[in-house]
Length: 86
Image 1 (cartoon, rainbow, N blue to C red):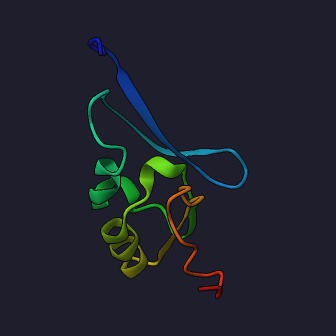
Image 2 (cartoon, rainbow, N blue to C red):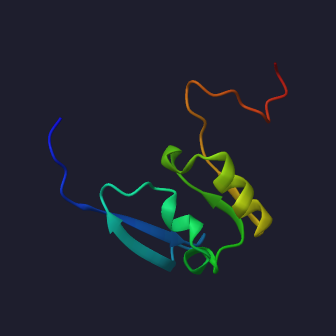
């Protein structure tokens, strides 16, 4: 495996495509890190749609307490807890 030099852009937009906030991080930073910072998600409420890189039980619970429902697709090795099927 080689080296990776770069950065990630974390961007929050509303349903109209307007940018609410953005943040650059180094390429090796976990995707969930910016959302742990209340200053980054203080303008967010309701549903937050994100990719699979943002999956995490602790992050989901912390955002939920702040009035944010994190919605992601589930990974192939995960059970859908909302499905109702065991």
